Amino acid sequence: MTTLPGASQRRRALAVTALAAGVFCLRPFWPLQVLPGWVVGALLLWAVLELVRWVWWPRRSV
Image 1 (cartoon, rainbow, N blue to C red):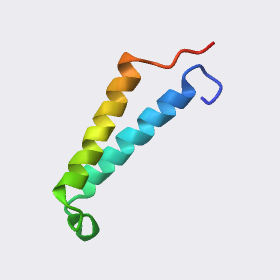
Image 2: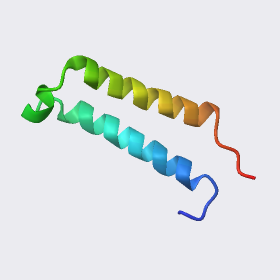
Image 3: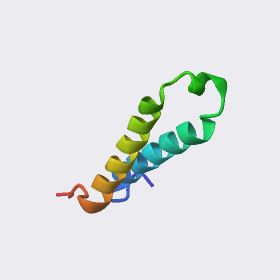
Image 4: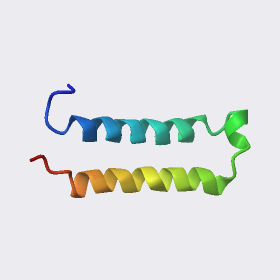
């Protein structure tokens, strides 16, 4: 999978999605309840923007 074109973008998109889903799903647990809502919102917004950038403006290979 690492030798295919676009592997780094797919890996980054998977990491962003996993991080955002993890924070969203683990929010009810105590350590993440301490985080302010704007931190969680900013993280989810960052994840959405990264995925949109990845889909609309993919990195071109030379």
